[in-house]
Length: 446
Ligand SMILES: C[S@@+](CC[C@H](N)C(=O)[O-])C[C@H]1O[C@@H](n2cnc3c(N)ncnc32)[C@H](O)[C@@H]1O
View 1: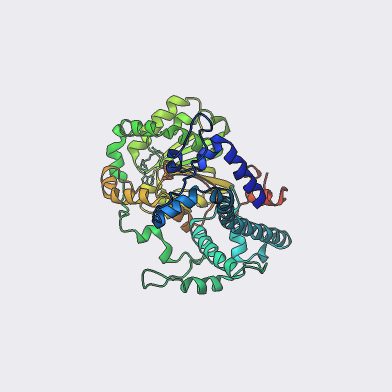
View 2: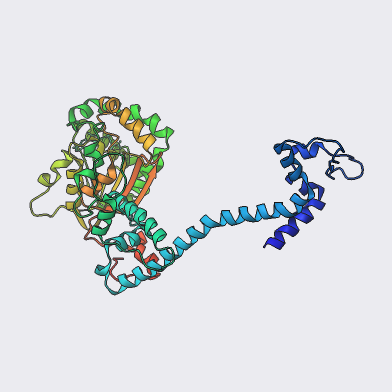
């Protein structure tokens, strides 16, 4: 390597163009003759009675000398390359161990899925493109990753696998340096501890309110008030995404003025029946007008006024009313109890049914969240909308699984496909297990 670089530098000095790039401006000023060889460096002739120059002057002379350029420069290049390779080596070594451990986890999972430790489960799930880690799982996995970095440093040479128990993680985490005196425990996945709740912890999130009267009064002007803002951020694309998921018996919660109806026309063939629900009677009426105009021949439609928190009370006792798809757009921010609403939606799902959400809430970026928090009061006054809620946390609390998550608008717009934990993942949702094992698992529903 050394020889190659040294040859490159020596040969590059023969090439005027390449040599130009390694010379300093001060050196370039000292060209003697442009006609013979414009890039030949002037060799400064020591004057007979010249006084010894300053340290800096000596250094400049040394740098300009042929010895430096022929012998020292290649060494500097080589050292720089070696230094650059060190982090790359550690990164690759880490990936190597990660890969090795994943192979073991896959084998363990194939033999007995229950044998996976919490860390192994999170590592496996984090690889998935579709089955996302829930927000709390993400937090815990991040802590595992921090512990893992330290573990790899300490086990520099050994090939030992990182697989601590939740208790070991807790112990490690509690010993880490903190800026506040309060010691934190790592989150417990099964029992969402108060400490990790973003929504209840954040005093900038407005208290929930009954928004029925507000939207009753807004119904007539609602479309005109929001249409330009929605056009500006291409919300239509996201509404189309929402409606592309509807099929079978459909319930739209918080239908508002039916702003999703224009996007339903491409998918109406897949719909057996559709029910629109909103707590505001006037909003439902606007939806009714729009739907009947757009689909005059579609008869299996119902328009209901009621609160989504009371969905179960509104449904018949014999459990006969169930849906294949429950959709909601920008409703969770306006509910008094959004977690209860999500739980109700889950209870009204047929086996294998899906909840599709298009919502706005907290971003992945703190500077955006600061803005949402700062303007939260104004937003509440203007739209009765709590736009700084962490939607992922609501999903967590409702005990629903995310099978697909997309984010838009600086990640404040949440597009989620949710399922009940007991329901299998469908093949078209490209389960992460298939991706990992490279085969189709029999336990998945077609
Ligand atoms: C911001 S608007 C969104 C309307 C519509 N989904 C859209 O995408 O334009 C919120 C809607 O949720 C309705 N809403 C608020 N709380 C509700 C509740 N508890 N149950 C049912 N609907 C509710 C409001 O009446 C309003 O129509």
